[in-house]
Image (cartoon, rainbow, N blue to C red; front, top):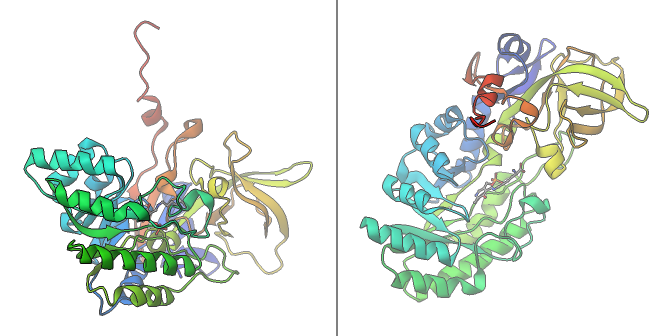
Length: 421
Ligand code: LLP
């Protein structure tokens, strides 16, 4: 579900013409819909009515402060994975008591920053991290509230690069070690285990892996409580998938996901934290680009756009599918071709769509890459000295630039040529 649709033959974001934005802002640009962000947050919140929940939006999906502020205004917390993300979340008005900190490699500097900010919970992912945190918190005269991220060894049935809950993945503490680590934490100064945490992967479209993982977690919480640990919250992570193709079966409805969650948590009598990222932001954003050339190769037709793998890396990194629409709606008698939509970057892996049936476009035509609101702008880079593109947010009939186009000077000027050269 999203708020990008054709009005009078032109693709709009809510009530704003994307052709209009392209003229004023210049392509390429990411465009987000406030209504879609708000709807996704609200739908996800509502399916858990009656349960004490906190949604900590996984801001790695899209960390623009305007997006964060939109969600903060609805009451969202944040799942952060770096000191930089922590700062962004606080600046956007997310209160520290709604922030959890995940990640396998939190540095001492980052742990200190989290303790200084007084965040809700640090999701500890290893014994060395636990010892480091205990030392730092003791030195600071503080007590860190911690959860341990448990790795349940469950196959999330998603792309290998975004599966995180299998024993061979670097994430979390093996289930078999959990009781020992909680006992260790209870003995250490400066740390207090208050919760338990899990995140088994991303773009998960089958509910069974969640069901398996949550049942393992439930059993563990019961035995930890028997051993005297006061577990007051369970963090079930994020991971629920979104539809990327308009014509395929939709992934599980949040309602059905909620049924699985309720089945496992209702008897636990504790607060439930979620860390959805993609579900909130994915379909709330598009990437708008422009055709530079249409090139007839020997074996294929290439539509060469000004959007490259540096702007949206998902197709080449995860073999991800993103629907592509022309900004100007094509008439029913338009010529359709099978082509690759590629970018200008000097890599064979630089494509947005391969062997895709699409209307024949010509130089100067505008197109939109859909479902690009999560893991789009945040994973972009300046490869080939290509500046980061602009980001725009729309609300009803108004829009605003929330990150301007980066200048080439900005990239070049951070280099330093040593005096001796
Ligand atoms: N919590 C933790 C600890 C995570 O590592 C992640 C995502 C999330 C929550 C949010 O997961 P979501 O609800 O968005 O599925 N760049 C990849 C996705 C990487 C996900 C990393 N962790 C992509 O573009 O598909």
